[in-house]
Length: 448
Image (cartoon, rainbow, N blue to C red; front, side, top):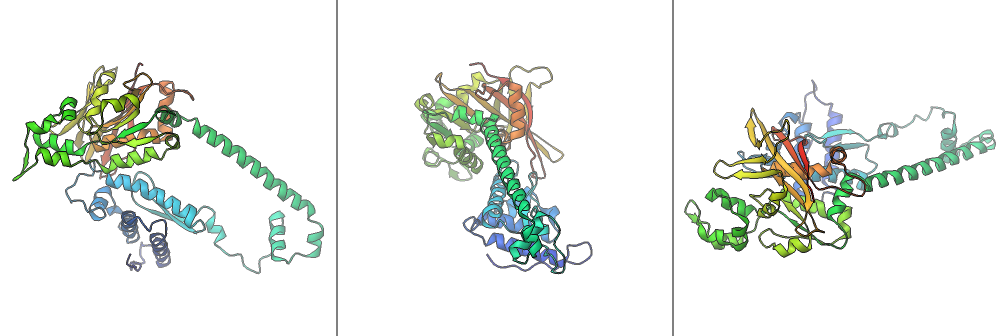
């Protein structure tokens, strides 16, 4: 990483030079740290947004610009369909927290990236601003237990203070013990609440002891094939491979043949990030978790394992096995390149169909999170579906959002020991490349 000097900012309306230098120094320390040593992309990400902010160009920071300048995306790329910036932003937030918590816990200033945007915030660490200001030597110590301790530590306590402060030590010791007891009590109940929360119940229903969990990401080579032929591929043809023998699509003069598709297996980085995120859950540590390509999965795997399917039916044909259980049926029109959700039995106030739309710079997409029985009676299946990448990502984020998912769990009657089968329709709207949290549109309970 080449060293950089602080930009020359004009005094009028700009940050003072000292503040700029302090932010630049902090940025350089973070970039050269052990926490970021092996994360070149995250280093470039952080450097780009911090330099733009320090240079007074925070308005230029958005998902589109980050994708172009940091991840080498084409200027014409669609940020709503390519979630690399959003997924890397999550990792960057976690990496920054790790750095300031473990590698540099005494840093007087921290940098963070608030959710909902990509503009970094430089601010004093909580409680660090006072500690960083030295007390003048001429200032007399403040009366009280804290002053007594400070004076004793310096070894300069007057004799009368030493003789009359025994009760103060007992008071301080009692206060410390009380704080420890309260801390243990609060930690116990916080962990207990966390472990028995709705998300824990959901994950425990999938990562159940004694059953292997198979995570199946989307097949993006299949998506490419269907875009070329503008025809949906049913599950039976997908499993047999016969669909590759029927068509010979071309891009320019290069034929994409059976051999080419048979030799190439692709999936999105967003799907892989979700698979890793699921695999790191505490509940997943208790069972055997495998990731399987959709093309090599077999029916026998679904019978003997709990399964997590990622992607809509166009990207993961295995979702079609469970279509009869679902009210919200995600589909994709390959001729118009339009995703939509068919609401088979609309309730009052619901639409019969929900389509992806783009209007006035806003892009609206839909996702479905569903928990339902497996092929066998004792199995469970979890679906993360979407009308596109943004929709699938909204379904993926939903159970990790403690507040939103807890509110939803109360609506469907979840209990600490049981999560009923359900499907939730979610809507997400992105503008300027930045997507806020998804909104719950409707839900259904799925009967066993």
